[in-house]
Amino acid sequence: MKKVTVHTLLEKKRAKQPITWLTAYDFPMAQFEEKAGIDIILVGDSIGMTTFGYDSTLPVTMDLLIPHTQAVRKGAPNVFLIGDMPYMTYQVCAQEAVRNAGRFMAECGCDAVKLEGGREVLDTVKALIRATVPVVGHLGLTPQSIAMLGGFKAQGRDADAALRLIEDARMLEEAGVCMILLEAVPPEVGKVVAERARIPIVGIGAGPHVDGQCLIVHDMLGMFDAFTPKFVKKYAAIGEQIVQALNVFKEDVKAGGFPAAEHCYGMPEAESQKLRQLLKNTK
Ligand code: KIV
Image (cartoon, rainbow, N blue to C red; front, side, top):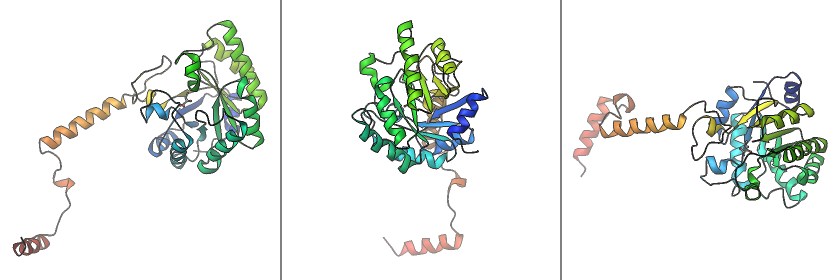
């Protein structure tokens, strides 16, 4: 796979070739995704829910995300890799944001970092770009703001809210972001944002008219069923297959079917005989 850069993604937008974006949190999944030719991997703070069992993304920290992001980069050296700025790693001040984003770039080899929000994060976005960190914006349903949004709810569903979101996208683009992820908004909103932007607009629940589609890999593979947003399409039922395989293993062990001869290490007959002899002289 040829290295995916910000230019590759811009070219895809211009050529109207849909961009594909998934999350990954570990080395094997990253390898699968690069093999499949996925353009972008986000090591999302959704790891808090998919992998660590929290009920939101808020407890996720830099120290938790860094080793996962490093593992994903090792598994997928050529995808466009985005580090996800955790809650309160960029909201306090631009200086802290630069320091934290710098860790994703220097310690993990990321191609960009993502942060949530519109007009309220413009100064931070500009500070990151001045510090040479490419930034991806995230608008619509921004999971780090669930306390303010009143839960995981679709956004931009009335004209005023939609207009504000469309303006936020323009402001982020003017501030210099290289791409925007648009989450859980009506297709009309996705269409306007994508049509007006020169940068790629990728949707996760933003309808079909955006420049690419993103999903959380545990959702689309059927590996996470605590809840499933409306925008998720399940492409496999891996969770069910895992439980099925584990049950077969359990029954096999109980019935003495595992291990069979082919799973055992051999010992030359002479050594086996010698061992039996030696054992006679020991307790
Ligand atoms: O953390 C995450 O996985 C996200 C998704 C919306 C892609 O930000």
